Image (cartoon, rainbow over all chains, first blue to last red; front, side):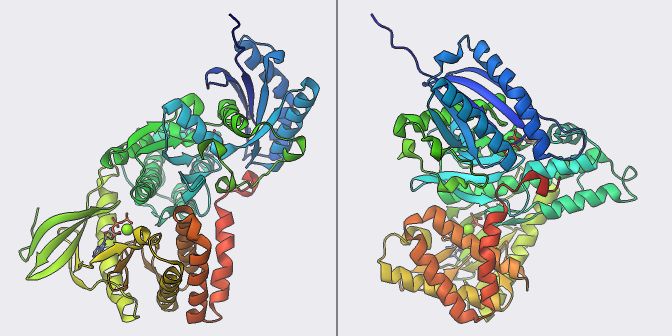
Length: 338
Length: 223
Ligand SMILES: Nc1ncnc2c1ncn2[C@@H]1O[C@H](COP(=O)(O)OP(=O)(O)OP(=O)(O)O)[C@@H](O)[C@H]1O
Ligand SMILES: Nc1ncnc2c1ncn2[C@@H]1O[C@H](COP(=O)(O)OP(=O)(O)OP(=O)(O)O)[C@@H](O)[C@H]1O
Ligand SMILES: [Mg+2]
Ligand SMILES: [Mg+2]
């Protein structure tokens, strides 16, 4: 009996600080997942430095991922990559790498939307059909659900993303990037709530007023007298996550979905998980959080979305693989769900 | 827990995101009671403050916008002991459920009315704060009612008025995609007509708002 060779995809994530590589088969089994993340020494992300970092590490990262999957480069049937949205210079270097690999090795290439990748890997790994998704990361804060042929946006931030807000505050407080996990730890030590601006507009939210307020708390003469960094971290989380939970609940009531998915880097936060789980149960919806290794940016989410698309419409023409730094997720066709 | 001697709660008619809505009797009137439930996911301090201020704001705003000829249910009582808002019960259905069941010319008419009423609010610097097709009720004899003013504010800012329009625009696009263009166009045209030339800046700002939350290059963000 001839055993059909299983098909293999190489997924490459390259939109921001993480260069992520993953090897998956076409059934969604993840054979390996390797990330190399650029950590800035000071200040924020400088696209040029990120680009240099990714250029230096891509070869090694891909080699390790293939080795961990016990395969070789010739076993790859498809390369999927993140075409946008993201930082222009970083996306460009990603596109350069995958085009080179595709042409040298004659492997079909497919571009996917990064945000959709976060949702699709969540659907796969949590076994969900049609969730309302809260996608929270350094660059995005989006409440989305599938409606009339695409992933519609029901709510989002009106200014900065929640992860970006937390990271920026953490840096002001002298903590190293990424600040999210450190703020979470600090918050666990406090129970002292300092009232902060709470801004939601329908299903949208705004974090800039909150950012200004917590930054001012650091500068106040009361800092380290009446309250400490732990208290600010606690109050910041309680406020920001209550806002996120409120708009998610509103979107849940509005869309009547029966599943809720929490995804993106900030989904790792236990307190946020607890809140989203709570409202999901209140509305009799199944709650899922994406497994930790798939929460932040990674190659598997890109690979899997590429496989879904490839099965429906085949690979992209090289001319269709230009990057798109501002690609809106509600503009993307989703043939695998129509 | 009914600490209010003059009201009888009859039955729950709807469980929203924030509130539970009861039909009840207030003296001998048939009324709707909006109860903002405690939200256990958030800490008590914050929860109490939000429920109380929103109940107050909603009661006040219903009265204010009515004076500007915006059709809203009449308010009977704001009961802060229970966080109840007692108002007239409007028999009808949500625009969200009706929108696909009516013909194009009727839809056009409704959205022209809605555009005009939003202009009434905005001209008087009232911002609804949660304009969706779930928060507009249509009665059997085709009257329009706006509800759910808990997130409303008073503001003279172009930005705030523009965000209000952005909210209804987005809900039309996400939830009623096939009618999005016709409905939003009717709404905006009559909004302009009612508001006058000062509305240009407000309408122009919508696109700026739409592009803002999206992926902004991180070096330009607050890093
Ligand atoms: N435990 C945590 N609590 C809060 N925030 C967290 C936690 N762990 C990670 N984060 C935040 O997640 C963010 C990183 O998310 P992710 O890996 O998805 O990358 P990203 O480039 O920001 O994503 P995207 O490109 O999708 O916007 C950072 O802002 C980080 O602080
Ligand atoms: N006065 C009223 N008469 C009849 N029905 C009403 C009245 N007020 C509200 N409703 C109905 O109840 C629903 C929920 O009310 P409302 O929007 O005020 O609650 P909510 O919980 O704040 O909603 P949201 O989920 O938008 O936060 C409305 O969509 C409307 O259909
Ligand atoms: Mg991401
Ligand atoms: Mg409502």
